[in-house]
Image (cartoon, rainbow, N blue to C red; front, side):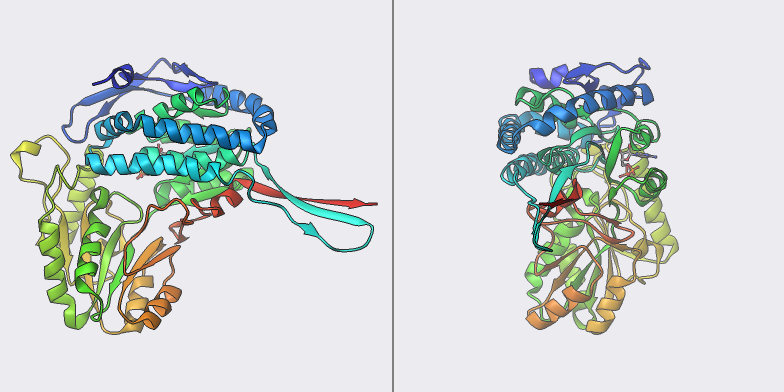
Length: 479
Ligand code: ADP
């Protein structure tokens, strides 16, 4: 354990460019999901801490806004460098909090650096327009920052989610109050500290730790907060949405998914099988963009599912596939095993907790596939957030599209076929924010990301995100 990890034994807030202990004086204990043992003691924030962060952010905003665009870009680039320099430390902390495999953690750290680098390069975007209306008038539009942005992130990809929202928020001239999930706050705190060392002025990025119902609610309700970006469950999205509606502030909601992966008989089935496994098992299925409904053309369904099951069976728990994040999540996935049983589903593989004695105490379940499931069943409709795949046969293109869209969610989708026309038709017809053809998902920071239907609204990532972290002003001058 290096000094940075050791220093994190007590995790305090980061407010106004410095560590700040909670007004309540209370701390909760984190849990290592790989062992069930304790990790750090995490500050229990309350509205007083949010007030302090909001005051610091409000003070910092005019100054940050006056920074020249290139100077803001240079600071973001230095943050990207600092993330890369401390990649191993970030990975250590993320592994302690989430149990994810090291190569996954390191890939996420690199991706987080890429967000800062990408947005640093876009610091002069988005540009405004000049509108030609009448002689003697000069009319132009400009995009302006909102001011204080509240960002609430979940536990599944903690550093990455923070970077994904913070980088575009900062580059467009906003200041931030960030609340990571209470179970996995360590990397966000290191990001805040390194950002300060990279030259980010005090108050521009504040982190308040604690529970969603207390700190999260206080952030969304705070009069200084002008926009909120939230990633998490549909239920919490609705709760936040009600407050935002009352306050008339804009929201980006990145919520759940039950994404369909559509495999036609003519596809390269080796590629499709490999991607189907990656789609449902990455991060132990704990990503909103997991591909958890595998729709397979009926003539190849059974053979293809056998192939997917064989590949998934090679995943080593504890090596390729990490634990579930919390005891609660562990219990929830086991509850779905029970629901599957009651619904009469057949587990081709898995359907239980791990039986590896070396992993005892950790929150591990086996990668699980239920075959030939009815799309209306609970295991096909509800987000399980574990490495659990259901397979559903379909008869033709129209049937595949109907089944893919028969879901309250619409985050991402995949289509595997060698027929390019069909690939585009299906991509056009599926209600989802992102569709992948002959591949599954991408971490590329350039690609706009967000949902249709209950998967949310607004977009993160890409140039598109900058439109959500800035608003438009029209200026009309007569001369
Ligand atoms: P998940 O199921 O992914 O944990 P949650 O929606 O419960 O999703 O949590 C995502 C983030 O939202 C976490 O940081 C959590 O603390 C926060 N959160 C939970 N409840 C609320 C709430 N009522 N208001 C604001 N934030 C909340």
